[in-house]
Image (cartoon, rainbow, N blue to C red; front, side, top):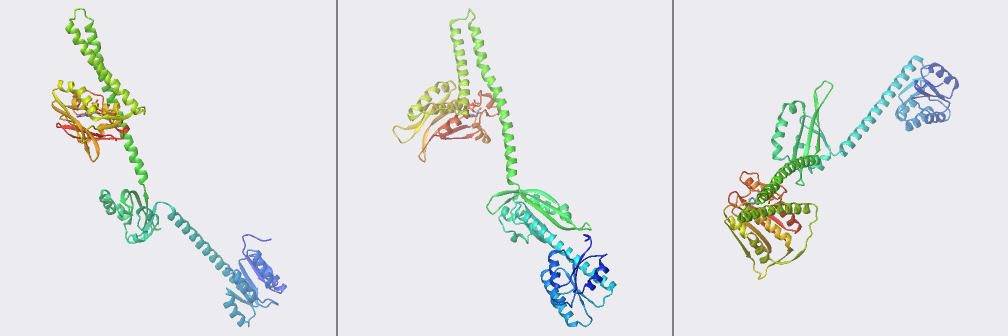
Length: 501
Ligand code: ADP
């Protein structure tokens, strides 16, 4: 019966009596496998798990030495012991050189000595096996580490107080610089840091936390060799030895640019949503005011009209006011309809050639009374070389753009003039509407085209409106493939420009 816990010894000897003695002596401690010839011994080595070989030298056919030479070739990790006669010096010499035997035993052997030699040989074998296992484990774990360090997107580094031991190749992917180049730079991970974050990282690198323990966790921006700004999150932490002394610092730098962009996008979207919400509430409050005012006018003056003793003159006056209120309501309803048509993409374009002079003149006539009622000088110019200047556009949309801008210019101007017209700049037709009114604050010159937006200054809020006009203008200009922009000086005036392709 073989015992799994016992070591396995192969004993080769051509004399059966020797085999019997060896077996009887040692079988309590070891599993003994025996062979009568070297050939048989080699076969056992191939088939069984053996921990030690012991062979007699003198055997017919293959000698012990020949057998061991074959065994060392195939199973070099096993210890080999040769049993020789007292005078076999030459054989011993060769056995040491050619079969690298562990020990030899001289005949007649003493049980105690042999036991010691066997134990020693097995111990050496066990240690060797352990060492091999450890080396292979170490190799495997190093390979695993390298595989991981080289395949993760994050940069991983290892350093002592004054030397970098390792930087993973992903450094190259993020920074665009070969990691070899950075081995002499102890703080390589802040290479290319942006001025905005430089001070913060200097403080980190001089902090006690970092100097004493090597700890930090910070985000900063770098400019890589592709001239892209990348957001980096770098973390460093200490590695202690068994005495709790810091021996190394390890660190990880991750490219968190996408995450940052998403975060910033979210913040922007949230701010925009909040702003939209505020604008919408302001719009609804404003709208109800804008509708209620003419409505009250209509109701109030119709009641007055139903009074029997109203004179003819008074009747005419009341009716003109009711008429004015109805127009105001119609404008508001019209704006809401135009706005929702743009929002739902239902505006249809009907483009044709139109005479510019005619278009501008129609708008001039439409607003001349209103301007003169406010004592504002209204004028227009056409500064073009063509005799009959034409534009290929949708007349209804073009007129609404121009009229909306003129309406605002007259509305927000209390004295002075409103001048509009058309000129050519680098082969492009540019329309403009210029007033000497209250002006628009600089920070709003782009935002003013957003829906519901109105200037919130005390002065601007004295004028009525819904905040829809300019967003309708911008919507139409986008549909016509043009551009709109403005120049303005507060309390001096505003000029809107637009092109149409
Ligand atoms: P509304 O005139 O109904 O308020 P608009 O969308 O036409 O809405 O205009 C938005 C805001 O832009 C106005 O409330 C006003 O504050 C400002 N604005 C527009 N045009 C002028 C102008 N010519 N001069 C000064 N402010 C203007």
